[in-house]
Image 1 (spheres, rainbow, N blue to C red):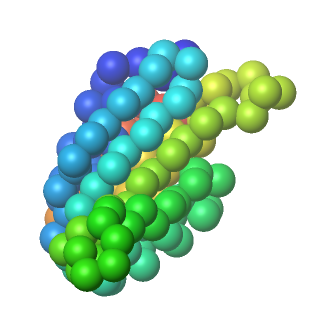
Image 2: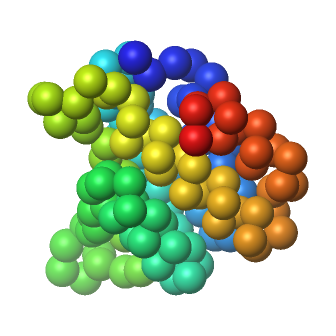
Length: 125
């Protein structure tokens, strides 16, 4: 079961990335999470794509608008974590994504090591 602390932590970690703002966030206790973001920093896009892949979380590009209304400012990105039907720990993909993000943010100097260790310990990593 996906708990509120993990949901809050995911939002907090995402907001630490350069150029990222969360437009919509939905989470369900069954382990499903959908996050729609505006990201203006292409390195942040690359980082999230890497960590989503490692955590087996879908990462989509959502163009908003068409024709002349298309512009980089109208592009949104979506993280979508949905547990596999046979997973005994439905929150595992979200937790794995959080661990990847925490380690990356530590490497970037945006999160203290003791915070990363505390999170990992709380999740059993």
